[in-house]
Image 1 (cartoon, rainbow, N blue to C red):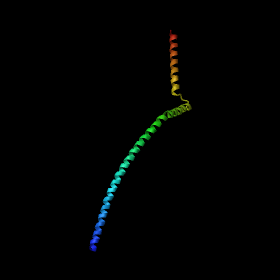
Image 2: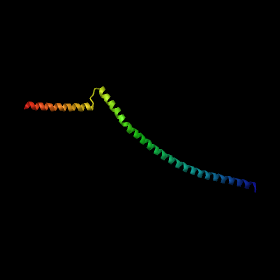
Image 3: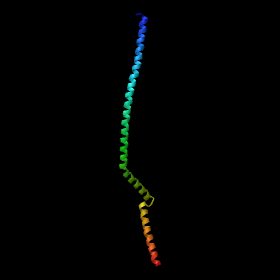
Image 4: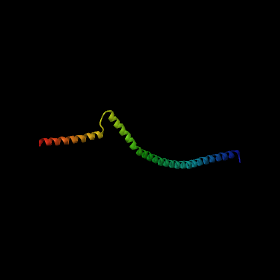
Length: 115
């Protein structure tokens, strides 16, 4: 075999190897990307499940702490009303009842005077 033929054959071998390398790389990359995509989907599903669980826990804690927070808010409102010397809703209701009783007594006395 001549020197030119050997070079040609060597070049053809190198080209074939390059082609095999390229095709093999693409196939391996495709397999790896497919496996990566499956793994990413699985992790995403795990994260979604963990996220839902975390949200449920937070909601549960919020529901448990709600009465405590409402009591704290009520106390702050009550303190503010006291500071400004304003009556509370209960005090207003008691005053309304007392006024209604007085009105009934006045009406009764007025009827007795006209009789």
